[in-house]
Image 1 (cartoon, helix red, strand yellow):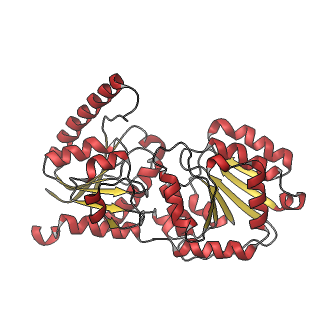
Image 2 (cartoon, helix red, strand yellow):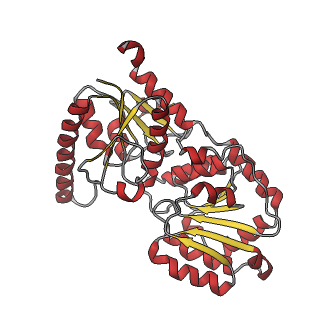
Image 3 (cartoon, helix red, strand yellow):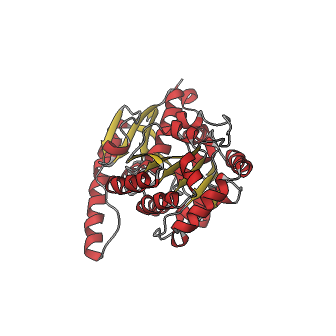
Length: 368
């Protein structure tokens, strides 16, 4: 095995890649080399991923009928063969999987080759890919105190590390929160892939606010590209200053700027809100079969840091009323912000790096 070489396997969305990147950076600081195994979406979400090499492994998500599933199994088998050849050449000390079906071929190949594997589950509900691979893993890490849908044997040994956030986000921990005085700043994000419902409801809710509040309101909103123009038009007609984009590369600045966040409840988003210490209104994705975002939101809602509004209950008038109530009560916002910060695990990347090294063993001692 190659001393201090880790292969990180993750699906190609921000929710999988961001915590994987945070771990990679923590391991690099400890002298490790990193190889990333993922899918073609790396071009959108992982351009800055710090890796010596990037392996694009064939993969597929299980969906559709029996014929489609057979095709998908064939693609995953092809990916496993590709990954096996790559791992035999690389001889890594460990493969760390962050979920998503693109992680399956690499983890399966590692297991077949006798390479140690670690699973990190970012959500409060274990994803399907991780469920398939966790039972045979050398170690399992979890981000949240709860871990629904996990096999009992996996849940019993899973170590709570928190959800790794990138160093620029981690640097926000402990910076504090200043409640609004005069201008009020609202940050709206649907996660790395946007959220159509927030693009439709939030601008209309802002337009329904009292005129004096609209005059003081500034909005930054991340949304799907096809919804940007319509949302901007609503804000413009309401006289609300708004900046909209499909993606923000300067998220630390956006969290720091916000007095209040309206957001989906993806694992990375919830973790970043907590580390930044920001009050939030969370709208979990309604169509998720396992309600993973609803379970993620519990971390902040039970701490008193967030209001949770189910997608089926989200209305223009209801959201406008909640926004007006919170912006009228700076002390409440400050209390929610403090509760968010108290629920954070800013050193999650270091905790996960510790687990990697303890699982691999004393590499330096063994090789000296």
